[in-house]
Image 1 (cartoon, rainbow, N blue to C red):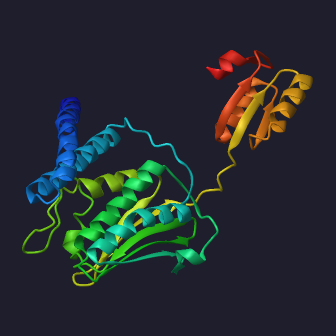
Image 2 (cartoon, rainbow, N blue to C red):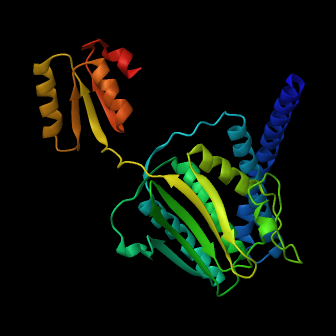
Length: 308
């Protein structure tokens, strides 16, 4: 058992080291390739080299992310995120790619067009992780959906969670293929040409990220009927408002005068005051704070220690 743990750690270190080694030359290759593509945009050889270099860099980054997560080195920090606004942002990035391929793109919320929904829908998640999950689903859908097909990015509320999904009208996946989808290094391509062969790292990372956020992932599909990949995320409470200035002063009189001067400037929004280190730390833990202004003498400590 102890020997197996050592071997597993060595394997993890090997993957991390080799991934870092690969990423450096890949990054150095991309800049001259992009410059050459600008100068010789008609040269198909440069276009192919650039496209595949970017693809390889994405795979290396996914491998690094997965190894960090697997080794417990990447701790996700969950915050309230407005999922309605989030998928609207994703749609802005993605609809041009769909248009270029001739794919119809739809965005929905609780079964209605997103434009008709204005109320925020909060989930507890990490923005970077949520982006990786969503763009992985969207990229796979675009890869497999033929010209004239449909892709839908949407969400709907069920009980105490929200389901984020991406549905497509691609070739679909058999039941046997679905069992392998979220495994590391699995490849599911049931076409005869294997035109979309991949490593399987993307969906394995998606599964780990969603589970780290307290959710679950899955797929609903059948051959010839398209696919719908989904992630269930726990609902969250509304994000607390941003504090522009947290003012910490030990004396009530100086607190009032400095606070009034800041508000009178007309250049800041929400100003919140605290008279002790404990009270100030409470605000910092509970709400996003843009700026902290502290006197040296405050209750329960000193301003310098608080700022540190």
